[in-house]
View 1 (tube, rainbow, N blue to C red):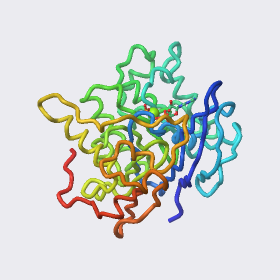
View 2: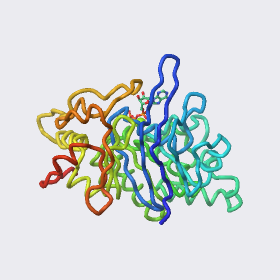
View 3: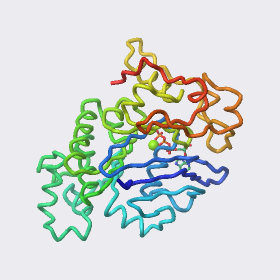
View 4: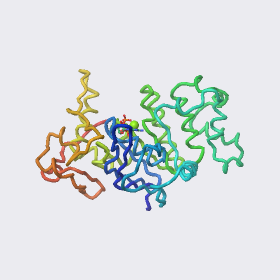
Length: 331
Ligand code: ATP
Ligand code: MG
């Protein structure tokens, strides 16, 4: 099938007064129609940058696409202007973010905010019934209609945002850390709801999180991002059982350590590289237990692992065949 989203080797930079941040340095990602895709990586690895590039939400004044391309539904959107983006966001693409409160109008009742999210072309259908439908879809009580955002819990606000995102019947929902600000129980409820909605509506989803466990439960395929580039991707099961990039393994170790009773958090040693600087070779080599001389001078080629669409960008994965046999059990 033709991909719904195709991002190819995207290089993007933010220009600030004193520095240029190259926040995307070779990010590639595809999403098939109806597919749930996860994007994971540490803070600052460029996940939100990529999501905003896909949604046309980066500030055009300070953001430049240096090379690479983004296609949505067969259309090249790489050079889209604000008006084109608005049309696309009103028809094919929607999003929810971490902090619903900052996207809601504090002095407007919920029902009006949902009405305003319904594209003009769909308002003929009967707006009030449509709001009812949307509230039911996200499992909000009808009583929430007349509420103001501050009267709702964090989980309910995220449902409102979800209702607004679904109002345009999008083909793709981008969810950037949608549950990070919520408590564990509410987090699980929202994740269940997302899964259910996706099945019912047949829409694709890009789920962004630093939590590999959460993403692997909700998504069919996973991309791992490091220092602005996608370094490993494939079916969730394959990434889980045989992570090939040392960074992905590090993420698993951190995730597993979270469950240890001693309260220690096994992070990957070292620092994320500064994205204002040029990086020669592999961006992970300074923190990599398997780094070799080649990694300093040559950027790793993308290579395929097996038949199921599992890819990795790492010289060590090729040279030593390090894919572990024991697998991972992050829940
Ligand atoms: P997190 O997990 O913390 O949300 P992330 O993976 O989403 O992180 P980004 O927010 O995309 O990462 O940031 C990638 C890099 O770009 C960081 O170095 C960040 O400081 C920088 N950056 C992000 N947004 C901007 C902006 N609008 N202007 C300048 N630099 C930015
Ligand atoms: Mg982010």
